[in-house]
Image (cartoon, rainbow, N blue to C red; front, side):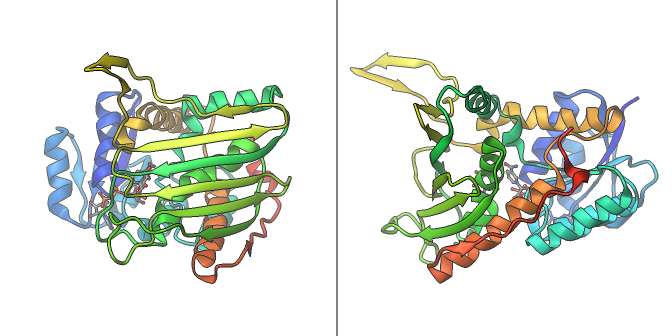
Length: 338
Ligand code: NAI
Ligand code: ISE
């Protein structure tokens, strides 16, 4: 029996998830969609030839008795209300990052989910499903390079539009590192600082780009993440861990080594959709399987909270110029990994 899914937000990633639900994954069917732009919802139904209802009201989609699980892929500021409404209906909900705009908003979701008494929320932190990050994590756990001392990371996008703001470098972009690095190290952050190199001439007038975010963890690891969203040349994600007796780096995506025209070269991806395509597939299949079987197992509302708490400190640090503390409370037993 297919899991009957309702999707709120049929923009870039909403459509990409609908494509994978209808063409790649198994065990689910999109039976309802909603977008604040109704034409986009209707166009999505015809593009993917869905046998689905276009709800005008997102809350009508959530309460539709035929909808068994909800996918929230609308703009970040709308996520909290939709996730809380799904929890109130007892319906599992996959929510794209950010889980909520602030740590306080994420905590409201954490509290609602705990009151519901079972895991209902999975956050779209797909890097936890990426083969490369998993290989890196297994290497660290294997102990070959000893304890992690330093991490050097980069999150580079080719370009962003005029609507992209300086805080978005944190809440929209760095948020992936804030999640995946604490998962990689099995550690939490205690402080954040942001420093600004010389600004790129490709950044629009209101945007500070690039930025360097400096994080410290409870076990004393130091992390630098370069966020550079107008790097021009590609979508490039880097992560090197320096341990006590060696270094370990995130593998590059597979690509043919070309020797041609007196050059040796490799293709660099330009799009996040392609860079993490397998991870997106696996995360959503895991959500479907979790709802239909053993329960949800993926990134939790607590992970959403932890990333948001760190993001709040980074956004503060962007303007204060100071090292901002991050006071992460102990993880509730409800969120102990299975
Ligand atoms: P988008 O702007 O392409 O699509 C968002 C859609 O949501 C639009 O069609 C918009 O009309 C709709 N929408 C906005 N408010 C709504 C509301 N109140 N009710 C119903 N529909 C509403 O944006 P995009 O790139 O698809 O991003 C959506 C979310 O997914 C964001 O939170 C973003 O951070 C996240 N995202 C996650 C990625 C990942 O790597 N995990 C990659 C890209 C986006
Ligand atoms: C976008 O929203 C994503 O989530 C992408 O993964 C990220 O690389 C990009 O910077 C964000 O804008």
